[in-house]
Amino acid sequence: MQTRALKFLLHSSNAAYDAATKTFVYNLDRRLANPRSLQVERATFTPVSTLTPMPHVVYMHSAALSSMLRAKHTVVLTAEAHENASDVIAVLEETHTRGRYAVRDNGPVYTTNRDAHTRRIDIYFTDGTGTKLDGTLALVDQDALIAALNPVIWLDPETSVVAASPPLVVGGDVASWASRGLSGLSLVTANNISIEWTVFGSTKSVKLTADWDSMTDNSGTQPQQVGDSTTVLMFKTGSGVGSQAYLIRTSLLDLFVKASKIKFKNPSDPDSNQADIGTTLDVAINTSYRLTCVRTTANPANTYTFELLTLDGANVDTLQTDSQTFTALQNYPDDYDVVVGQQMVEDYELSHYVEISSVTAATKTAIHAYMAAKWAGTSSNVAGEHAGFFAQMKIKTS
Image (cartoon, rainbow, N blue to C red; front, side, top):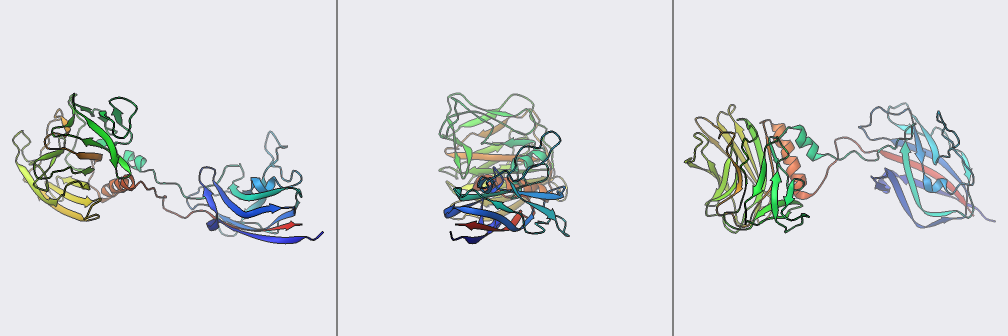
């Protein structure tokens, strides 16, 4: 009977990686049939750069290849059991370079069942305790990063909106919207008003379907807002930008659209007769935006610094900036109602809203990353290098 030896070169960059099982997978064009023996001739592995501490040895596993072997080939000893077979096919020891592992010599030759066959090869790695090692860096948890900044107000339309008639579905009416920030803020839809939960980019928003639609928190004392703060929100204009359309009103920021511009109430004298303050920030109808307002009491003093990023439409990715300086800044009292919407807001939408009591560049960058991930529906990995491996296997078939 004629036999032939096939060398299989397995590289992590050529595999499909299953993050749930931490397994590298190769799907063969045709099944691997009538094997006689299997040997791992070479293997190297480098774990993700964020792994700590680094293990002393790394085990290379394959359930598919192990199932082809004629007899139990490897046993991992533990304090209480030693008869449990393992699918370890190679042991990689640390080289002279910390965090790099390799098979020092050719691995043993394993006899296989001649009637075994497979079209799928799986490879995964563990430390000496059997804990699976990641093949890719962890994903950035944008929500956790925002939570760590202790937001004063955090309106998240994905997680904290309550349906008027459960379950919550796109196009369904919204009953309330609770802040994920400091306690004490929950926006409630007024009676006989329809505010819809809808799609906003790759995330969600609340849509004000008619003029004078609003959501209000009138429960009493609001979260304590401070003078130095960074506020970022995403919103979409409706069918009109000429008349005064309110976006949101808090004790720090009374924000609206009027005459195709972003405007806000004069913060020097917080009363019901505040003057309108115009910015140079242009808005168009039926367009989505990310608006940033950094409010500083010093450096620069008594200043509102704005950025307006266009998220869609003809001017997508256009960034506008403006700043307004005042002789003094005052807050509304803590029992001032927080309101979303009111007059001339037909088809306006408010999506994510985050307010942090910090004016550092790092704070703004973190909120922008959160907003970008929500809008685009994308995720990113933490900084570092992914794991990588190479293996050369020899399989004799007949």
